[in-house]
Length: 197
Ligand SMILES: [Zn+2]
Image (cartoon, rainbow, N blue to C red):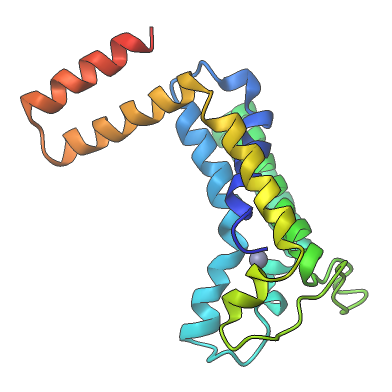
């Protein structure tokens, strides 16, 4: 998968957080799910900058489900002690969004789902390397239709969600205000806040 990871993570996180929508930290919670949905691909930095593309990036631990489950199990108790039930919910969401990423990577590539018992990559289809520009391999493969479909569904869910869009705008203005306070920004903040009532 190439462009659908974050939209898919958005749909899953939004669903998992349906009871937290009115909480002040809702956007931050949602952000945790979004980060988790692309977190496995953080290994691309290692792949390009340090490993000099020596190994397929799906071979790193960041793309191996058992490591995610292991880290989850290791963290469950401390997170529960520290942050209680909300912490467990967010940690579980992080795991699920990470596993969703790997599931999507299994559509047009492979993931070591049974590692360490079996070190093979499991996936439905493989995108052949036809074009020099690797992005073109994704764009012109039929599985890109699946990606576009996921992105479209996420768009259909996101854009009519006025409360979420307003909340995002508000958080963005708060962030801008913290960097460079101005009376103009403050006016905008007040009008955005009153619209969300
Ligand atoms: Zn990936």
